Structure formats: structure tokens, C-alpha cells
Length: 98
Image 1 (cartoon, rainbow, N blue to C red):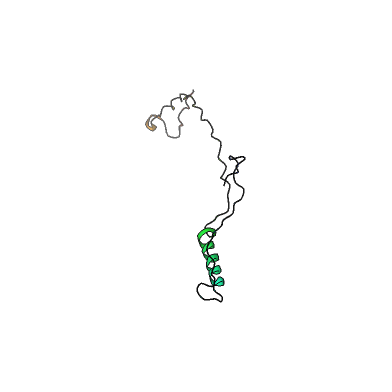
Image 2 (image 1 turned 90 degrees about the vertical axis):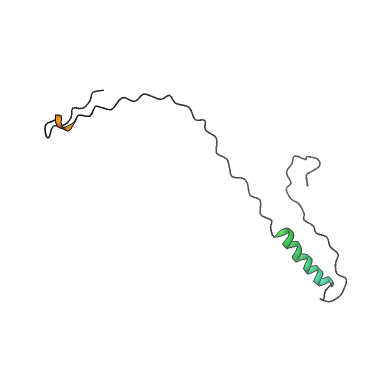
């Protein structure tokens, strides 16, 4: 199946062949040329052609992105929680200065 002059070249086409003896009788009964030819065609299609699928290119691959390891940045501690009992009603908590 490979091209002898360039074996690395991929095949572009090929031929499927199935050889059998032909019928020698006349008419349409068993062993006749017409009946045997019809049987050969049906068998050829069923055995070889029916399961062929058209060529389909592979899906393109995504480029692999290198993940950079980032240094962990220390997060500041959240502001301290002031209990509601230490505030007067309607008084907001003082914002923490950072």
C-alpha cells in the first residue's frame, strides 16, 4: 500500500478487489452467471464497503500553557470585631486603619 519510491508518503487512494468464480449456467437459477454476479456484488458491499467511513482529520490540539508558580502574598489580618455591647445604639464601628 505504500509508495515504493517514498515509503513515508501516506496513501492517497487504494482499490478494493474481491475475486470469485463466476457462474457458468444460463438463466437465473442457482449457479447461473446473473445470480452469482448479483450475490458477489451484495457480498462485496456487505463485507468491504458497508463499514468504510470517510476520512476525518484529527481535532487540533490546544497549546499547553506553562503554569507559573506565583509566590503567596501574605494577606493582612481582617479588622478586629467589636462586640455590639461595647457600642451605643446607632453608633458604627470605627474603621480599621491599615
